[in-house]
Image (cartoon, rainbow, N blue to C red; front, side, top):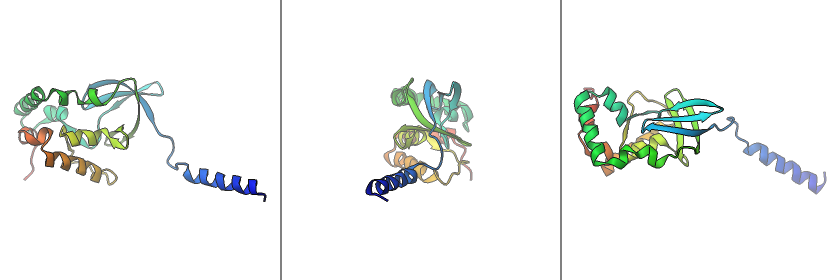
Length: 171
């Protein structure tokens, strides 16, 4: 083989080795933001509801809290004193922008900040807790690190009574 042929064969080998084996990357257009826990994406002319995976957001806690009235009141009080947190999705996600996402059985992985998922962002801000029923070996460590960071910094619900009113603590 000539030098050019050898170079071409090696280059082709590198390209083949670097090709992802897991298929195409799914990219959807963010069309609307309902709240911090519900977004709508458009993918191939179909609407996809994207709810953050593996977490329980404040909005979900308000609906299913241990003490519903106290939980809703605590969350409303928190949002009144932290209006930017209530608008977190609208301030960090942009409608009419395309985002990489994956749907998994536990919800939707929306990559909102490079490799960081939207679920991690909510946990780091203290606007959600890890769902106790969630168990995914790929994501457990990432989500726990994000939540621990918020607990250490006492951000979001970690500096309030929300957890007391909204989470059913098992004894």
